[in-house]
Image (cartoon, rainbow, N blue to C red; front, top):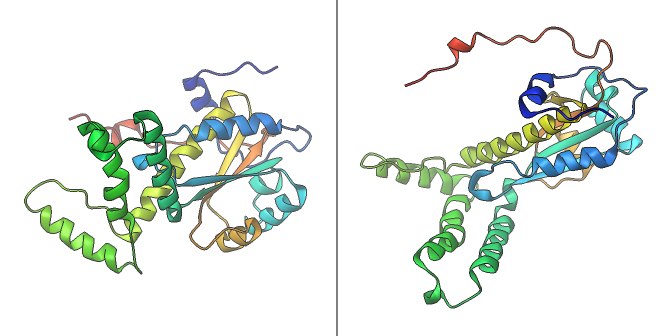
Length: 244
């Protein structure tokens, strides 16, 4: 049994493995547990605009390998996890947050809620809809202009365009993906996040709706002897770290 690694050890162990050992199987249930860790990642406004497709079926694995441009990381993977950004689900996820809050606060008359409770409920019932409601990108541009005018006089949230909200959803999905990969590394499993894919084909294979967007596809397995292509390179830390 492989001993679990501490957080720093798992981070240092994790590499983008390009070739997995085809003779070593991985436990589907353990991979699923790592996906469960993924959904504990921080997410913008707790909207959790993500989905995870855990692929173990050989037929689907082969189809996705082709869609991943026959990369070795897909071709040799024992399993795949497709991380999907779902900005289009904001209404459902906002309602889920409201239901959760009411289960905590109690479903009572509006005037019976405390000031803090009202703020939290209004956040999902009024603010989130005002930011996420969109029509062909036009409303986003109007909101962007209004918010930037307000921003001339005080700090204001400016990420209200359609493109901004897509980025927000993908950032949250990326945080979840990192949780997943570190969790895999902690139990001695390897991963490779892949951006190189025909995302339209991937969506068709997974039967995803139009509003879904592929964040990344993660190959899963145990690294082969030559699975990591070389030593890890990072630009000097001093060029990326600034203390003010």
